[in-house]
Image (cartoon, rainbow, N blue to C red; front, side, top):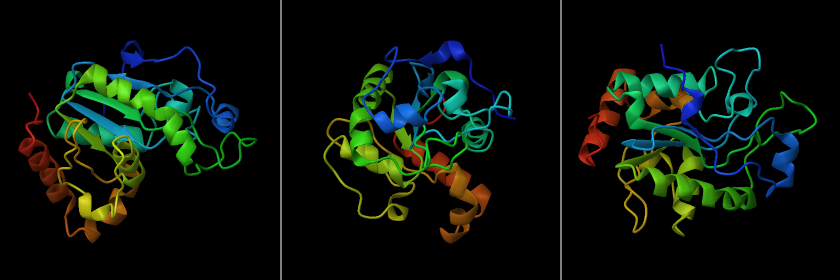
Length: 216
């Protein structure tokens, strides 16, 4: 069972943020990064989902104010890294966009829409600040959108996501990036990448060891 994070390890970078009017309208609260500021890995998602206010404690970042705390994705990604041997002090979880992008802001349980380029750009200074504060050995974007957001921070684009999964992406100003599948899509894409689940987990471990970001 994944360890639910301590709210004392939440890192709010502003008391409020109103850069994106549509996100202000649709969010319940800002989902800030959470974890150790001495972490080996920073795990980056795209944006918080709607969450479930009744799924205590795994209500999701839109309700907890902490990234990757949803019952499905948050618990699953945390279990993944705990199974790989990382403890809480080695992990920091955040999102490229900190607020829930509702398809229909008037419906609190609306499905997610894709954040706009402007929303990603508005939130990018927060992400860069987190990376500067933590200075991890490696950044692990989960899914295509998170990978694109990180590359956009260094004026690079992504030609194809699946080809980058578990490969090391070096940039001039960011720590090494090792993209992995988003936990919501693992069941679909792990077999398509010709892995068994155990093989995929081992491949993540090997990729992180290659960049010197294995468990301490």
